[in-house]
Image (cartoon, rainbow, N blue to C red; front, side):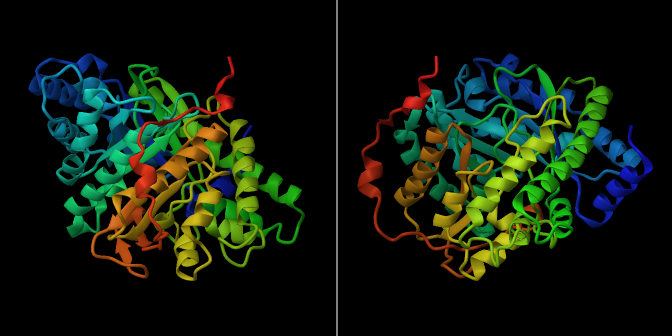
Length: 452
């Protein structure tokens, strides 16, 4: 039974502590849109998306108005396009990206994700065709997002795909140089990608998912930060309990929205992703939570331990509040989208090497990292390989969303605006990784993959 005090507490969280539902994402299977004629397949894709999601934005707005809960984004994820386009005669897959973007515009959603390929063990010709289409697809569309899964604990790491992705990211940055390499902000390289992630830019609708599904991503770094102020100086077990209780409240709100959206749209409820997703707004930062635990700056010694506590407590609290927790669930550390992370980079406390260590214990990986435009494709690939190795060995999802900002050097700032914020350009190691990347082949799966 929800009492009056809890209702007032939730209102305060929304009004003063940046609590929101970050996204209601409808996943849509496009497997029934396959066609040997590419133009026909694109028409089917457009028709199915617009038919399935025609009421998504309106329904989200109605729930916002009735319950007073902000829903920041309404989004769509689709079956990885490399699988759908494989049946077609298309020489490249840019027309499929345009079909996705046209459907996005018609439905009014904020993003559509799924211009994706799954190549952890090898690339088929359609997979490679899609990957090579990514730069033009992201440069020529407005809000289409792309992802490529290049590794997994079961399969190892596809180093040929890693090498190719370094070149693709560089080309994407160059084709969107007039926007600071914005295309790269819509591109994620995964290890152990999940099929029910509602967050962009990495969302796609997995092949084991139903025809349509509603997945919700909640947020609330500001709420956790506020709660920890009340236990300043207390032992860490008190900190953990406080985070757990707060995560429970945040996730319960997400469950309410997810169930309501599912009922009104006539689409099955999938999962609530209870990740703490920051924004550039002051007071809505994961970095500031870590500093509230006693660190003078995010990135100093102790940061990884603090993040491990936060991530674990968020999961433990959230799992009790929803009938189905999924997606990534934990704490995100996207540099450009977190004002505390931006400040830590600018004062020198937070480096790429420290961020890499932090990704061992949080939800995703090196997210929204800007590096000098002169950074080589091989260095980008090596950064991807390092992050994929962390995911592969530790049986967790890791990802890289990196922007080699054209014409920019360390100390410059790339402005993206909105939820994507601004990214300080961070230094990378200048020693070459080119010979390592040129080896190609596959890094074998680890021993902990043999679980059967």
